Amino acid sequence: MTPPDLLQGGQLPDIAPRRDDACCARLGPEIQLFCVGGAVRDALLGVASSDHDFLVVGATPEAMVLAGFRPIGRDFPVFLHPQTQAEYALARTERKTGIGYHGFQFQADPSVRLEEDLLRRDLTINAMAVDERGQLHDPHHGFKDLSEGMLRHVSPAFEEDPVRLLRLARFMARWPWADVHEDTIMLCQSMVQAGEVDSLVAERVWQEFAKGLCEPSPRRLVALLVAVGAWDRIIHQSPPTTQAMARLDALAAQGLEAEIVAAVLWSSGVPPGLGHALPKQVHDWISLIARGASRLPLRRPDESDHTWANRCLAWCQEADLFRRPERLPQLKLVAEQLEPQQHPPSDTAGLVTMLEALLETPVGALAKAAQARGDSIPEAVAQGRRQRLIALMQG
Image 1 (cartoon, rainbow, N blue to C red):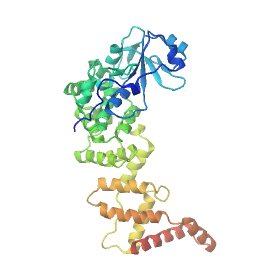
Image 2 (image 1 turned 120 degrees about the horizontal axis):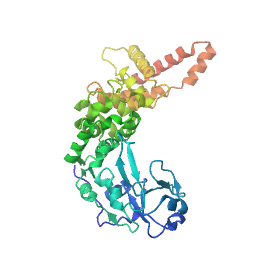
Image 3 (image 1 turned 90 degrees about the horizontal axis):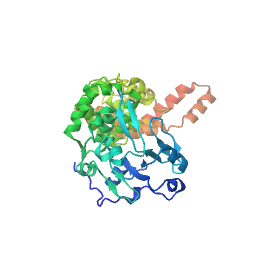
Image 4 (image 1 turned 60 degrees about the horizontal axis):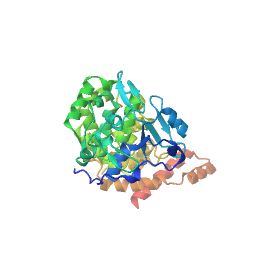
């Protein structure tokens, strides 16, 4: 796909940092403010971003506190603006001191320049800054890479943080028009071979997956991790088939939650590498699929009304639809992807319409009538639902 057109001219006043509040006004003229990272990239793409991060060059932690900012960073100096709650980080450099994404030593002092801070970032498209005049600063040619749809690492330090590999995969899912530069692919492969990804904790992996599975093309996330050898090391499960990956895009296009898309991805079994970190909803849906709840009870040619109605009621009970009716349209979409030949949309649409009406059966009235007669309430409710379903089918 062709990358979208970018804003031209190098002026981005809408995201430029401002000094028209008390805190920023207290910072001396020698201190420079920049908007950095994803907000700059998204502004160039014409995409609104609510996440604006600011970089402060030439300041000390003491100067930030005196100006009224509240320190929040544990590993390096980051400050919150007391009114806007925006984050302001001091320009810093970093040095690798251990394995994984916690093994870094940071240096933040007034001597660190903008170019040095941007050099430590992951991708060139995320290593741009906008100053107080709205002027774009792009020392690592991120604008060119963004205009060409190229995801490229800023420096070899990319491989020092395995979370960057997960972010790269997520960006692939977000932008179908983007490609990863071959040098960056090689760097990712080197990262895997060096064992850096082995330090990733399952909870962090799921965080990135949860975001990526809601993007327009989640199969590209999976494909990149497989291509660089990270899938086996992180997930500890065989890579999904091409057909299975295609389902992900189809489900994401329907706006399904990440937890449901993940359950379809891992419908053959909970991945050992992530099991304990997956939300309960993912486990529930994997279990639903394993129990056959994703096979809708379409009527068979030789079934009587009574037999089919009983099978429908049993299926609704198995899928817990009487308590969770919102699952019905979700199960329809999952069924059409997992077993498309058995679930043509023309058939499933009519069934779902009937089941939606069934789920609206006024069970309170049925229970009250059964209680007045001294009958079993569960049996009366089941009988009422059965009669309702048969009437819907015949009517």
